[in-house]
Image 1 (cartoon, rainbow, N blue to C red):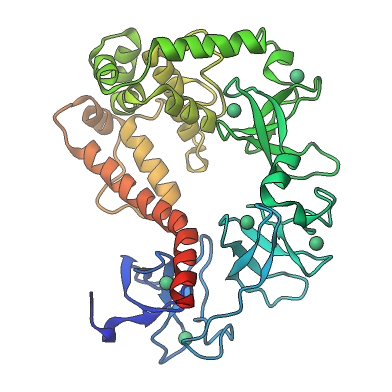
Image 2 (image 1 turned 180 degrees about the horizontal axis):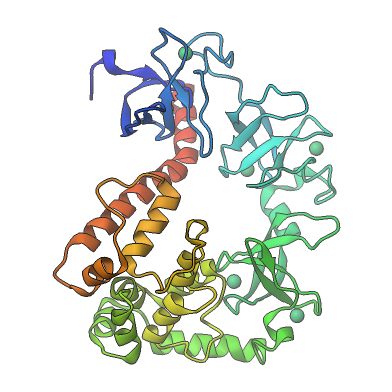
Length: 412
Ligand SMILES: [Zn+2]
Ligand SMILES: [Zn+2]
Ligand SMILES: [Zn+2]
Ligand SMILES: [Zn+2]
Ligand SMILES: [Zn+2]
Ligand SMILES: [Zn+2]
């Protein structure tokens, strides 16, 4: 722990804390991370002020909480309104994340119970609406008619707005939780079992379709013929999973096994991600596929980890390679599919903008690295990725927990 002198007030958690430099910039301000709340922080731009302003995903505040008028002095906290939450249906505190002084714009909060984005309801003063990545609801769950009363209890309300149905992702007949209430288009849900995005099928009452960023299927697995019969498909899934239960030994066996898929992965310079996928338990492999837009549980090859892993990497439209080939910065047609080095480089560049210590290499240089098992470059590059992602995730996951611990400490 440093001395009091090199600590600054944090505009996120309002404590005097140490801020660790995570990005050195020469033109823009350096970026720090608060050691207590793990949020992104930057020096306040007001001359003579030593305290830290908030940093956000796409922009950074110019001034600290004091100089922007959010608080009247350090040692204070802005009020946290206690309101009903349209996400978790609890009456709870909402922590301020963005203060908007522009007319017609609302402040953005985060529910201290469920950590989701919320905003004050435009029709009542007792609740917060749901906020989404690209837009925010105008009305709370009660004012828009999703529920008739807050006082029924959070669990009952959750059940009431959930929808039961067969999931086209994971083949489970379970509850789907409401994500987004729509008046003209269909409501959007996520499967409670596999977390995939789902919508009610347009042709039946029993199935839920798949959806993803920018696309939603109209018909469920059974109505589109992807699945012959829900019950049989579910049973087949269970049999395969029971027949090949995951264990360290099974993973080792699969890692050592040769197959034509393995040879293809090696040839393509994708042997490392192939082996990661092969060593995962089938549910994690399914979740990876779900994030990329399809399901392995409904494929004929389901049950063969090598075939599943290769399809995730190679599937022309939706696999990891195709996704990277289509990244905006690579609109110029490229002769080869991305190898693992290029994939790490491009995704790293897109997600974190600056890559320390790794250069853009020609295809022939990078494929040589990918095929050379004694080369340590790739494992170092993966470590770099893990560290960056870990930072982001720790920051996001810790927030709700930290907010609650803060409350406890202060009420002591
Ligand atoms: Zn902080
Ligand atoms: Zn300041
Ligand atoms: Zn909530
Ligand atoms: Zn309302
Ligand atoms: Zn599911
Ligand atoms: Zn259907």
